[in-house]
Image 1 (tube, rainbow, N blue to C red):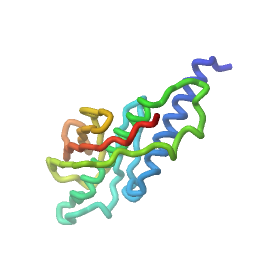
Image 2 (cartoon, helix red, strand yellow):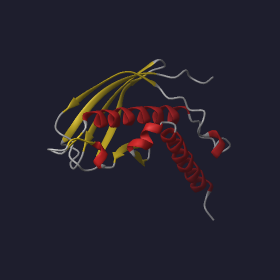
Image 3 (cartoon, rainbow, N blue to C red):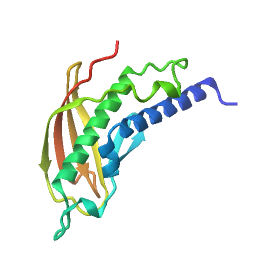
Image 4 (cartoon, rainbow, N blue to C red):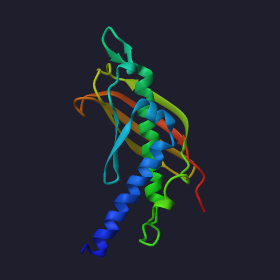
Length: 169
């Protein structure tokens, strides 16, 4: 029989997985791109599976810059929202249930976003990870980087600023 700590850890994992699923499903463009997130503890990595529809320059071939920018912005948004959720989530065993996830999460609004295209995106899967530089009550700044074959060989880097949603009382 599992201990209460093991049950609690399982419940925490379950609620985090449900929250991530709800966040991703709230943004239809994520489904269009096919982006999904791999979660390891509280760290997220965005994955953009390669698709021919993403090729902007068939002569190279290279991923369209708009697809790259969208992937970076989506990764920033979901990472920030995920972090907000984890911060606000009060993990008492009494409060962990499926009904407390989804529908109630409000996403931050993008204020501005800039992308540095460091090299052409190859016709392979892409990965991105965002780091929150600052997250306050009203404003957040997020750095995001994308790579394909090697994490240390980035093909794009971005900075995004967000207006934070009103905090629940």
